[in-house]
Figure 1: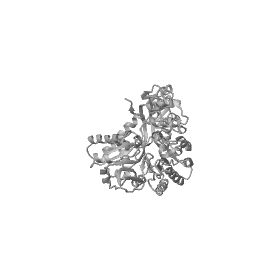
Figure 2 (figure 1 turned 120 degrees about the vertical axis):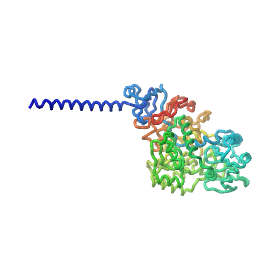
Figure 3 (figure 1 turned 90 degrees about the horizontal axis):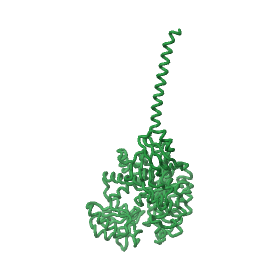
Figure 4 (figure 1 turned 30 degrees about the horizontal axis):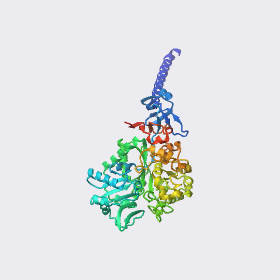
Length: 558
């Protein structure tokens, strides 16, 4: 028996050894895989923007996501990386998220006449003339004029446009997008007549003659006659906008008010790998968009989220289209207007609540904000996690702040609006109403968090201007010396959260982006200066050295 057992014992021994070797081999392969990384960023000052606002030195990335955050020495020892980025002590932040933009419109605007920051109507007309010489066919489209920058501060008249372009249609949109001037050729195509009325808008007529000025819904009468851009033009707009946004560190943008066909264009470009920008898209409030959203359901991919509807309560303060509780201080008997009947807002709120989609409403004036806050409250009925948003939340009556906190309504604000408007907003509102306008700290206290954006192209695309305006409450000239209504300034920590994790939260995406934590997308920026420590006056001058999305370098400063 003993002799016959030897071969069996020998066989068992060989089999055991072979199994152990196989297990060790598998373990070794797995261990090597676990210790591999696609990217290691080291020797940095990494602002993780986690719950503790922890600052680290390094992080590892694999498959487009953060693998581990820690000390340079520990991660260098633990991981073998395909690519190593030595930050040489520079500040690293999560990729910036702009919670309110018009990304596509900005891109389209790059292909038209740029009228921003021009000092007079005459200079604006000269720019249109120059553009027309190089673009000899079709409509002349421009954007960005602002009469508040001019000496007269009055709306322009179309007479010069009529003289220069008697047959070629011209439409030039005001900087806020809520007013435009059209020449007679464009007005004729739209069939607009003197003293014509339009709900939710206005057609300016003086002494029985059209001036060319159109407000809010009246702009659509002409805009709908402009030929649709080609697919190539739309794609170029998105890609041009992306390039400029990457250069300022933006990795996610909320495009506030698109039509559903553009979503297909975005998806095509993203599927091709050309459009790497992450987009949170709000569909404009119209029957076709609602039908498409309800029919197709929400769209959610790593780079695209379509699950909300943008509603328009009123116009803008600069063009006096904001709906106020009491008349404008500089235009008695004029309160502005709502762009739709209150019944429409109530019905769409009830419909979106029933269908489970997010509602985001443009509201500037204290009357518009009160109307929408009360409608939201009637539908949401107290504490909730629906994250319905009021875009701008610009002028709030003191009695109405409570609605935000009581119903978890999210005020989505743009700090550069305060510093752009402050020189003339007091003329529109008077000193009393101005005290609860642009009240970002007061709004922040309602829910304990506040998403920040720019509203570009109304404002500059730079997140550093956003940060500067939020913290310093000054314009780029450093005025006013003590800051505009400084009691509503945000701390630096609050401001950076508003541009990262809180902006992600407004999109229901705080678990996938907005901070540099394991499991989240490796979207980050390396800056030449530290936003948390650099002198306040230097904040607008901060530059992006590199921008990464999914661990891929999408911008490097030349």
